[in-house]
Length: 100
Image (cartoon, helix red, strand yellow):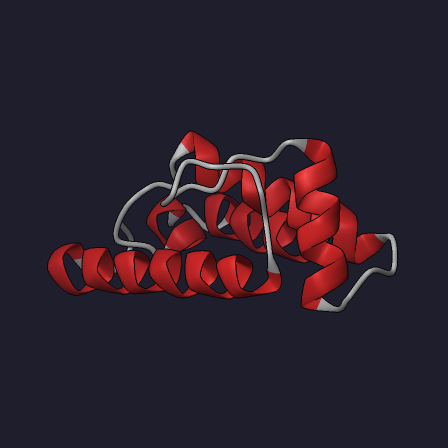
């Protein structure tokens, strides 16, 4: 759970402007991206911060990488997956724009 993001989303709905809830995304996240995001929030929330330790925790949890489709994480793979997801979201935003 991300209380800040949830509050921003709620505020956008409260003002009658629900399109602002995810204004920086040109597409919805895939189920694999949502699972990764949730796992990362939990892992970082537990105090784990180094990419090596985060990668180990993702492997232990069996989280499937959204782009490669594998679940054997390394720090390098985590970096590549996050960069790839970010690039895909940037491309979707460029194509679909504000509030998609």
